[in-house]
Image (spheres, rainbow, N blue to C red):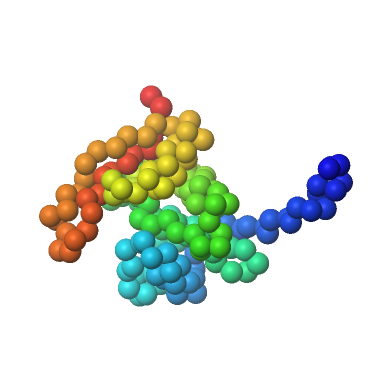
Length: 172
């Protein structure tokens, strides 16, 4: 196949825009989290509030005017140089395109101007996909990633898995 034939057979991928969420995105974030069937679903109110109060430390991915993914985060009160990533989600039809990693990059690029140099998240031990996502993110940025036990199952009122704390930091 010639390059001209090959380019004619490829479907161009849609343009993705990364931006801070606003209040009107809250319902869509809730829908994406609900439809993921793997994230802990928070109340719809919490997603609206998150888009209002933590938009600087959160990101949405938009394709053709529709939000198709999000990262929610906040600055840790006890560690003002650290953004804590709460949830990462991508619509089922957009998975496998690298959007989650690109949203993490967009978030870190934005908050670095606020003297934030580290990222943390919690991941359950059986969530290989999230572990790989954050490991690849750290590698792309030339940063270290460490893991430690964080929340044991007995601290939760339901049958929640344990959560390990992952820290992504500059190499020293």
